[in-house]
Structure formats: C-alpha cells, structure tokens
Amino acid sequence: MDDAGSAAGASLIIRLSKRSEFRYPSSSRSTMPAGERSAVQMRSLFLRYGLAIGLSSVVLLVTVLAPQFAREGVYILALAAIVCAAWYGGRGPGWLATLVSAFLIHPIGTFWVVSWEEVFVLTVFVVVAIMLVEFSETRGRDHRALQASEERWKAVFENTPTMYFMVDQSGIILSVNPFGAEQLGYRVEELVGTPVLDVFHEADREAVQRHVSTCLTHVGQPMMWEFRKVRKDGRIIWVRETAKTVRFAESERVVLVACEDITERKQAEEAARAAKVRFEGILEIAQDAIISVDSNQRIILFNQGAEKVFGYTQAEIIGRPLDLLLPQGVEDVHRKHIEDFARSPDVPRTMG
Image (cartoon, rainbow, N blue to C red; front, side, top):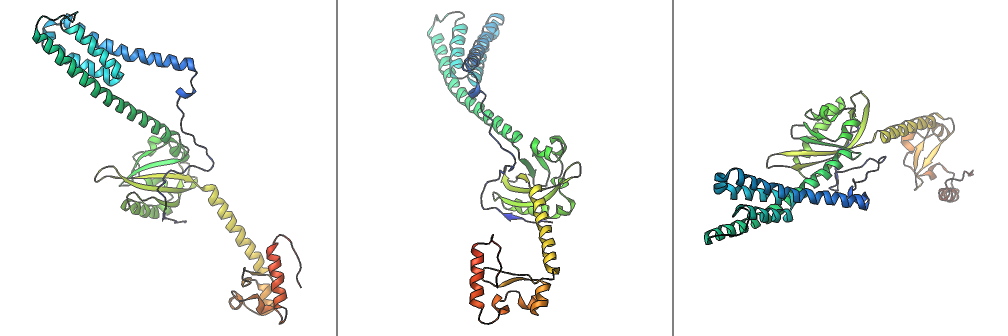
C-alpha cells in the first residue's frame, strides 16, 4: 500500500486529468448570430415591461371589481405590484408600474385631484414607490447575478472531467459530480449519503480515515494522498486526492476533495520496478564480473561474478573507490577513460 499523505505547498484544490481537456462553458449569447441575439433581447424587453403592465392591470381590476377594498388597500396592492415589477424586470418596468398604478388608482382614470389631501397622498405614494423601485431593482439585480453565478459554477461542477467530492465531518458524502460517480461506476444518487470509506480499498480505509481526520483539524490547509478505490464492478483504480477543509458555519466543517485517476501511472511504476528487479537479478547471477560506479567513481554495484574475480564481497566493496581494484600505476589513466566515457555514455567502447 502506498500511504503517501503530505501537506501540499499551494492552496490549489482543483486538479484536472492529464488525459482530459476542460473548457469553461462559454456564454450562449456570444455564439448567437446577431439577428437571433436581437430577437432574444426583444423578447426579454417585452416580457419585462409586459410584466409591469400586467401587474398594474391587477390594480385596475381590483379598483373596478372591489371598490370597497380599493379604498382601503389598493395602495398596498399597487406597491406590491411595483416591487415585483422592479425585482424581476428592473428599474424601467418598476417606474412604468409606478406611473400606471398612480394613473389608475387616484382618481380612477385620471391624475385630476380635488383636494390637497389627495395630492399629498398621491405624492407620498409616488415617493415611496420610487424608493421601493430603487431598492427592489438593486436587490433583484444582485439576486439574479448570484443565481447566474451559481448556475455557472453548477455547470462547471457537473461537467468538469475531474472527480469532486464533498464530505462532512462524519465521513458522509454530501455531493459528488457526475464525472466522479461515473468513474466509480455509480450514479450520483447512489453515492450521496453513503460513507466515503465505502469506495476505498478495504486495506486502505484505516489510512484514509487517519488522513481525513488530520485534514479536518487543519482547516484551510490543502493535503494530498494516494490510495486505491474500488469501482462498483470491483475493478481497482488508484487516485491522487487533494483535499481541503472549509468551515461553512461556526461548528460545521466540510472536506472538499478533488481526485485524479493515476492508475496508468501506478501500473507503469510497478512495471518499471518489476523490470528493475528482473534486471538486477540477471546481473547478480551473471558469471562475468559486472561493476557500476557513481560520478565519484565509487562502486555502487558488484555482482557475484565480480566477487569471484576480485575476491571481495559486496559488503566489503560497495562504496569503496574503483581504484582499489586497479593495478598500481594505471589509476590515473583508467580514471581518465571513465571520465571520457561519462561524457559520451551512448558510445560503447572497450577499455584496457
């Protein structure tokens, strides 16, 4: 088991797969033809101002169909219509709703007034309406911007070719993106609400638990580890995980995890280790004397054939200077040959 847990030096927690290319979803408007974009804008304009007129029409219907209610509560109804028009349509529709409502309710069908009291009431109504329009337009714009931002990040989360998990303090999966679930052979709903340890190899679970516990005690500090996960079909994959604990509330901590599939790299490393073992085994049993030295010409490999030729054991000779095996008087010449050979390692040659 490769238990390689260590703190990362950077605060980056998003890792993209080497085999995948990710692009942020581009705005559909930027790719629309000019004519289609104009049509969309016109439809939006009609909807926004149509909403203002429609809400104001409700005020008219109330004043006509329920005059007793109109005398007592039509102003409140009109202000509610104005707030809705400004919230969803913006400043222009809010002002239009204010103008239409004022024209309809006091007096009905005209701006003509018969007393200073009516003038005062109408003035207060318009001032309050304008204040509500400005407030509602600002809040509505902020709400729409937040909603659009959430939709963009949701699209990123659901479409990025990297496995993302959100895990609570007890180790339960709160969310996983579709790519992450697909890589493990599950559907999203099959993983949400289950212990995250269930997807790890049984032999690695204790170490995973230890690393997650450490991560939970180091809020804001990215950490990395490599472990095995088990797909739904039983196939084992290696993943490198970058995790970071964030605090959502005073007592609520959540671990954000980005996973990269490194199965191919692990398989290549294992194949290289196996090849090295086989090569070293061949060298060890070879009858010829085979010696390897480092850049300082100290012996780092001394096989059985060399032991028979020179009479030294590996324990006696490893780390000793190569000059120890040379006849007196040829050390400098041989050292020069080795240095020349090191400068052109791809050219085989015979020395001696």
